[in-house]
Length: 376
Length: 72
Figure 1 (tube, rainbow over the protein chains, first blue to last red):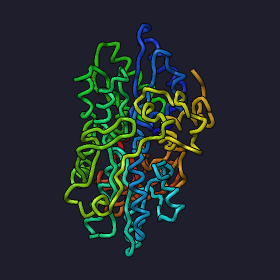
Figure 2 (figure 1 turned 45 degrees about the vertical axis):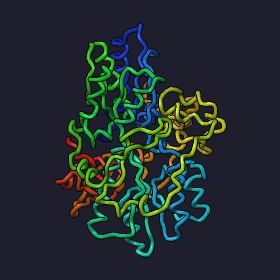
Figure 3 (figure 1 turned 30 degrees about the vertical axis):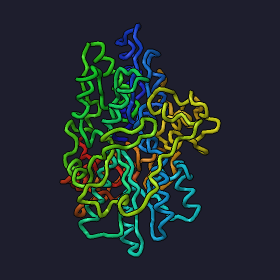
Figure 4 (figure 1 turned 90 degrees about the horizontal axis):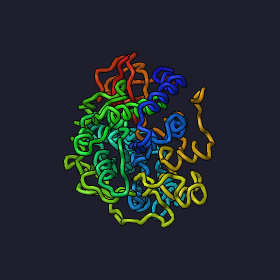
């Protein structure tokens, strides 16, 4: 399979494993954070840890958009659907089981709300066009990878004069989250594995402050196991050479400058919020997007009353520490017992990209782990 | 755990994560293209953000929108 098989080659994995082992400082412990949940999923799915020396610790970051959504925002979406009989709430599949303070969207659907899973915001717009007597609210979530699809949908809706479509915007941006992690006193990192597909949109330049201000490498990486291993090798090379810079391991996909058309599309339809609450990280300034004034007619937060209540996480849940990389999934008190993919308490167990779900499915519990053909 | 919906490929829900898929463009009609993945599944993709695109190109697609035109 093009772009896949060559990045799952066990011989190449062994070669990278040897390269990493030869270049690590035996006296040093390396903490490398993979920002993106897609990387976390790949690391556990393919057992990437098995190819790394013990001195390299992969720390899971906050880059699963479902995992960082605060419970109160789930309640807000459910309230729009349950308080307005004409509303169809459209959301992505991963979101429907995320628990809010008043249950999940699936629970709200069971109570009678019209909540539908869509693959794309463009599908939500199509539902609006097919149901002119209903109001369709798209529950937008995701990092810069997903924001262009919402932005493009808004432009299409405005262009054709659609009036029964709006967006409840929860899009977040990755750079402020990385800054919050580095500012956290709980964690000392040595490098970042940068998010691959977010970077197709924003490019690699937005990470340049990391080596400049923190003297720390960033390697933007793809999602196959060889991609992750090669990015670790590039990080170890940088540190061994005394260099710290932004490098692009995923050059076959990520343009250094990103996608200017996508960035313009986002800038036309959205603007930065002053503050947004992240699960586990707290409120972070300028870390999320809301609809721009040009698109206020499509803003569900202006169109509908929402509770807007901050809901504290369940006491037993330690998603916050997991999202900051302070705790490993298995160190959470309820991991694998009260909290499982079938009965999630925390968001990290809901999304397939959440660190807890990934570890539960592919790690110690090894229900579905995919091995490379030959182990190192 | 992934809720099964149309458009979810493999066991990763591509809808809201950072995961996108490489698809081959089969045909182009204005701002949309019919695209096929390596297993023959076809979907409609918005291509405004990567134009110009022609049949035979490969594009990286997330949530129904092409984000990058891939070079061979």
